[in-house]
Length: 384
Ligand SMILES: Cc1cc2nc3c(=O)[nH]c(=O)nc-3n(C[C@H](O)[C@H](O)[C@H](O)COP(=O)(O)OP(=O)(O)OC[C@H]3O[C@@H](n4cnc5c(N)ncnc54)[C@H](O)[C@@H]3O)c2cc1C
Image 1: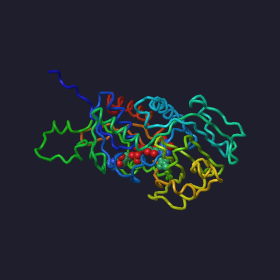
Image 2: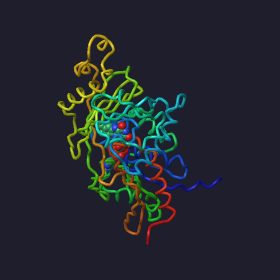
Image 3: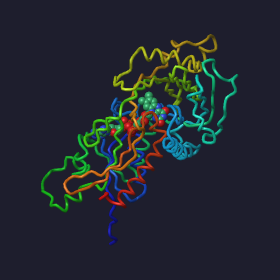
Image 4: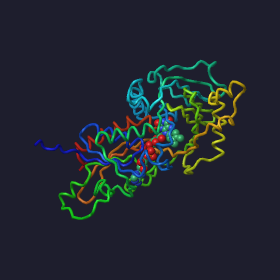
């Protein structure tokens, strides 16, 4: 009988878009046996502790401010993966909507010039096509991601390739270092295992994809991670099939993100260190007022046929008000290896968190970098 190949056991902490994408990436190499341990999964009810449920989401680089070279590389890499996934006829097509995106800027300072040559059908808009609040504008083709569908697609892809999931609220990564995911599977403590078996229970590596939870997770406790709160409104406007953003001269972003399902996310806000976990009514009102100005097409066609629509025309279309805490980090995304020591054991811990407002559009790029860091750590071993 052929001897079973020894796979590296890896525990991924977190089942948001970052944890799921990273776990899929590793599992599909065939060299790893991956288990995700997380408090919240895509099939759970929405909670403020799980940001991925609350995103728009679209792939618009620079949509959340000017970025570093690394950030741009991660986003370009992700677009190269996601654009083919959204192609007509692909089995993944249903997770995405391809559309034409217009970006308007109230000041030239915030224009992301790097999009030229990177996004399909990129063009600079002539002044006569700009709204009065804008001094500059761009358009290009991109994708939006139907977030609930896409997260469940990632989870099923991971499970379908032999990945495992375990629910657990981890207080300290030492809980995983010592006993892997088994610390949360409630297996009996007896019969006692000998030292060799105990050794085998330890994971070969851990990947931390805990989002905002990285601020609190023992052994990580990265206090440079902070919330960038975003509030949105989910509307039912299936007749809207374009994306549009205005970055006002006051720095306020107003956006329209239609999903394939016909739902449309409109927003938004970006407030640092605001932990408030539920939507504020006055902000919902402000968002509706701003978006009807930016995109009157959100109102039902029968209303627009007779008069100029107002924010009140959007109220019957509301499915849900929402808010999420973007996991921002002072130095941007953390992609690096640390070695964790427990007794005589050293385990590589790869960090992949702090994606702020770009977790979807940088997910595949970040997963690739995390994978390379992991391979390097396992090949080289701990530093002396
Ligand atoms: C309003 C809004 C709009 C957005 N729009 C976009 C967009 O258009 N495009 C885009 O790319 N991004 C967008 N984002 C950002 C995007 O949602 C985030 O960057 C992304 O969801 C972060 O994913 P994550 O996996 O790092 O974190 P999360 O989704 O929060 O997942 C964290 C995971 O870690 C687990 N966890 C944490 N701590 C522990 C612990 N101690 N024990 C066990 N499990 C733990 C959680 O249970 C969860 O499973 C938006 C965000 C918001 C709020």
